[in-house]
Image 1: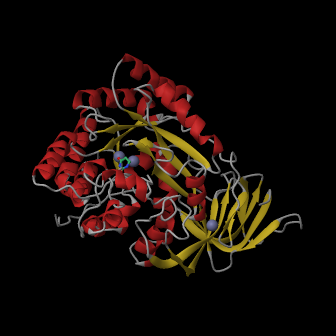
Image 2 (image 1 turned 180 degrees about the vertical axis):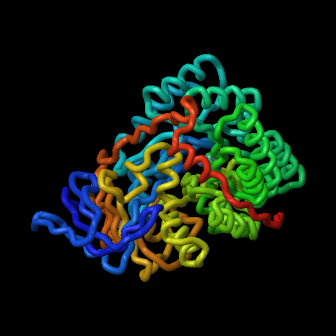
Image 3 (image 1 turned 135 degrees about the horizontal axis):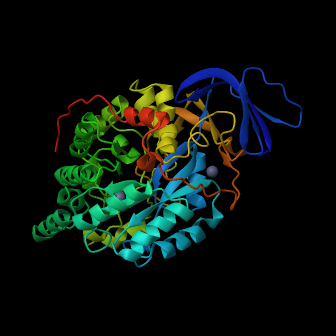
Length: 488
Ligand code: DUC
Ligand code: ZN
Ligand code: ZN
Ligand code: ZN
């Protein structure tokens, strides 16, 4: 770690292009990007010859220190972020969950949890009920607390789920504030019905989870959310797109010019749903998340959609539970805490699946793992770019090295990993976060409290008409559409 760093001779990659150049970092900021920078001997020099120098990953979707389904995730804002840094992710956006419906209390609770952060982070806010107080609090969150996105759950009946009337109220409020509406798109009433049916059939194991909530319920909720967002003319961000059904609804809406953003997560891109059929409960239960990881075929279709621009960026939904916690559902899949890991694995797996396989370019890799997220949440080019003036969140990536994933050496506190045994090409060799070298030679050097809260401003185009940059961005949301065959 040092306050002055020179990264020499690498190929610097941004979403807009690549060039061989040096990168000079001072006091947490990138101050120069050009060939042959000369510096004094008080500067730490890193040789990046033959390697890629890229913006650190930004994970748009995580749950650290999340109290959920009667327990709390094992990864908190320090060790979950340390894991992220070891995997080349230098910022994440977590979901504040209101406390007894209070946004203010929820925000304060998450502020406290995040005090020990070792990398930069931002917040989305979940909306779990609707009244005048919530409506007023949304305004405070946007105007005073740096939140520009709100997530609505169409699933988790009796807990987080809201109905269509409240969804419409929330959408209208988002529009008036210039905030982005996000949805967890599964039909919660139908999921409840599906779960009862499994139990009646005597299916209590982890396989019942996926069977009870098929992809058609994700497609239905995605379509409904898209149409309702279209009805009040506000942009929509669909989180964890897990199925062809949901993806095709997004493709159709985008083809018509509607502003809809789709976020696949690394578990949905890298895995198929066979894991929950493992006869060993612990092995099966670790794959339980919602929406479920789908049958083989959906993974490939989501990859293709990402490569053609139908889907725009990759998250993780990192929500890590250990075997003991997963065993809360040993007699009934409905009690298995929902969630899988991914915050440490995302950058490596997306490289292997998308770039190494030849599906996308290196510049597209930067776009889908970092730049697009920064643009969507209105923090570009402070984040998501290697440009003079940007935050010094940088990775040095060796495409000729390789990675291997196992719970034995990962940095999550969980004793399992849904990507166990995965190997592939490419490795994050160095991570620089906020101008500090935090990962080098497979060693973490992280400091609690060094991560900063990144305030995300609202979207002016929603109030003030569309300027040139916005127009360019909005037109980039439209993309060609391919059709895929569903396999379940
Ligand atoms: N899905 C999960 O699997 N975990 C956290 C919340 C969610 O929607
Ligand atoms: Zn969700
Ligand atoms: Zn989530
Ligand atoms: Zn380590």
